[in-house]
Amino acid sequence: MDAKRFGNFSPSGTCSSTQHPVRSARTLAEKAQFIGLNLLLLPLVLMIYATVNAEGLIVFQPVFGTPLYRIPSLHWVQDFAGWNRLNLGHVTAAGLLILLLAVWGWVIKHVRGVGGAEMQRTFETNFFWFTAATAAALIGIEAVIFFAGLVAVGAASGAAARGSQPGCSQCCTSEE
Image 1 (cartoon, rainbow, N blue to C red):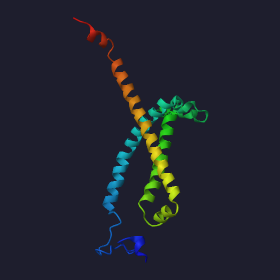
Image 2: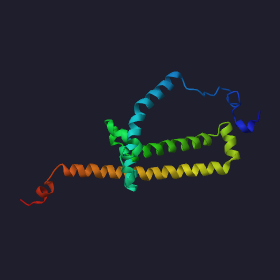
Image 3: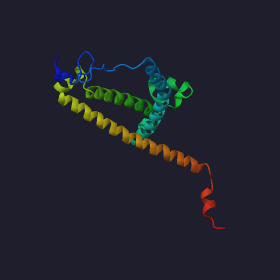
Image 4: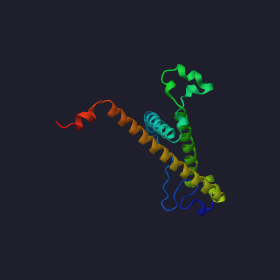
């Protein structure tokens, strides 16, 4: 076999310098723990992400604030509790998240340099760097949208807190 291609590792899974087998698989307990934590935490994180990102999209383009039931083919959404509050921004934020995960998954797979991906990165260098630059631009755009959403959510919660105490500015500014 070609030693340059595999570095210190042989195709049999042992390192030529130590002759110890390379651990490549996780144990069943580790896999179960990983899956369990993802099932527990991922929905909460994704819901918060989509909500904040939707607010950011609405800040930049108010059309994303259109409720889904106003779209002609989705008028039936209005009949379901909770679903009637979804707007176009939520759906777009979820789509952007899926796109971001797919592009970054592809880039990370090719950066690792394992097997066929290493050869593909070597032969398609320009395409790899174009995709990596696109992924970096996407995450930058997502960061700006997410920050705008955080500011919008923070401003809305601050306005709600100020509005819940009518006359506070009068009592604080009056000199007694």
